[in-house]
Amino acid sequence: MFSTLKEQPADKILALMQAYKADPRDNKIDLGVGVYKDAQGLTPVMRAIKSAEKQLWEQETSKSYVALAGDPAFGDVMVSLVLGSAVARDTVAAVATPGGTGAVRQAFELIQMANSGARVFVSDPTWPNHLSILKYLNIEVVNYRYFDADTRGVDFDGMMADLSDAKAGDVVLLHGCCHNPTGANLNMTQWQAVVDVLLKTGATPMIDIAYQGFGDGLDQDAAATRLIASSVPETIIAASCSKNFGIYRERTGMLMVVSQDGGARGLNQSTLAFLNRQNFSFPPDHGARLVTMILQDDALCAEWQAELEEVRLGMLGLRTQLASELQRLSGSDRFGFIAEHRGMFSRLGASAEQVEQMREKHGIYMVGDSRLNIAGLNAQTVPILAAAIVETGV
Ligand code: LMR
Image (cartoon, rainbow, N blue to C red; front, top):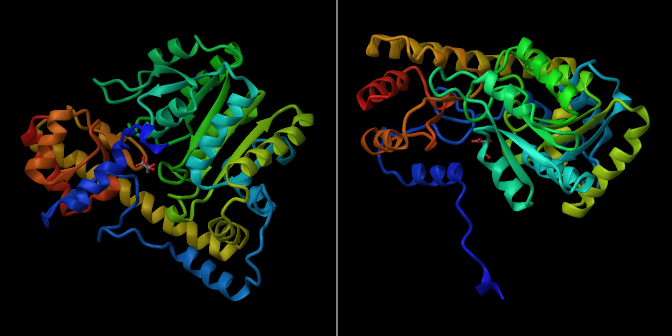
């Protein structure tokens, strides 16, 4: 029967990881997959995670199942981390999922269950796996303009015009912060305008927030999500702990549905738990438990926040260094956007040929659309990248 299978398209980001690994050059630079790396090129286990793991090893007495929705305490801490006090806890249905991608996948299935004809509006560009999963589930996709190739900022007028075509029953997928792949983000005045268009059209927002704490700070990065969730009748949120807790392989995420209609929560919650049961039954617990322990303990939480802040400021420092090195080498301000972008990524605006050229000639690996992972750099490699960018004529 398997002879009927067709080769599936390779995920571009994961294929790039393989190509980088296979490159024998010592001076190669990996700016591909969205994984944080320190100045030594390592992805460390965060200090608070190590401490929590030690405690957990000593205290955990059973590995039996927890609950279909995951530990309710994990739900509470995540709702509070992402939503703060923007909405009442009893308006939020929440289930643990295997990573942020698990939450995204399940959110799309939820949308399909609720409205089989729903269209999902996605930013152009968006994270490629959004598109891949939507296609896999046969959900209609509508692109909305997002990235302005000239300014490397947001084409806000284009975005607003395209979002006004959405209707009740459609979903608008938004990146809560640190837009992936562009690094270009809205300001709060623009987010308010997004709220207004959502209210006007009746479309439902779905927010993917995978980089909270990597942009302007934990609360600042959640501000748009909080504004939307407290302003519109229903909001879907897919949150990831992979990056801000550095627990990528533990697969720790949360799907939330906020419904201002207080009576809706019970049905939302049981539907989310049902989806967990159909897809994988009980969600992974280890990462979720560590996150819960950290967020419930003042000392651990302070330690985690301090390290997250080091990570965030380190990336901002690299952005500033890269922008000024490019300014020096090119004699122009056209790369100033790198210092303005936030999060792990910036879309450089290089052509596919130029990206290829930088890979062949300089061993610099970035995604084909010229997304670069700022965290893949360090103070020594920034000048090498800047020189390669200018030499390539970007
Ligand atoms: C990325 O965009 O590089 C990350 O979100 C990792 C992934 O799974 O693609």
